[in-house]
Image (cartoon, rainbow, N blue to C red; front, side, top):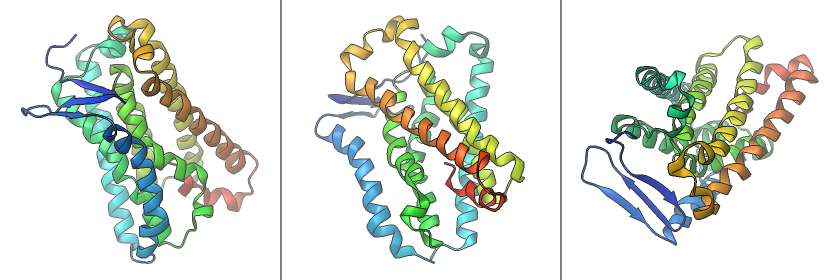
Length: 267
């Protein structure tokens, strides 16, 4: 294991993380662990019902383009930086090493930032509401996805494979997605974003499942931290189900005019 990897341990009975390059270690215990996790889901729902509607028609196209453009650049940087690390350490060709070796301090800084960016992404919904979209039009997939991804990434950072895979695959998909939102991709490429979302969700589920079996350091995690281990297994299949549903309805059996306007729901 790499010696310069800061501590990260998210369990519902104790959340501990070292902030790299500082002397700060954050320790959070119940009920604050539950407030941070499930409370973030409730906070998002509260915002989209009560606060974001107050900004209806306030966010113009320039604000939306800046928001999406910055998330495009951040996603691209996260993807490239993590891929560079995997290539530099030869983890890209060593599956066991990729899954089991903790990230170095500089990448942990990016990883923490990547997790926090899932709250930044809540403004995707604010932009849509500002443009006059109702919550029913925005849809369950978008709302459920944004309500739970911060919680999901808090959990997947427990395993090195999940942490790195998240920044590589999720970062790559979000690079394409936010580029499309900001600058528009050709119509033929829009289904590719959804297909890649499904692939990365299936991949991260597989990685989450096999790490305890392949990495001795994490073999006791499922039994000792049942809820933190269970949540990705509970959340991600719902994403997959509704992305499959979205793909089938919008790209396989939808009228052409419906396909043209569908991409805004892809998260």
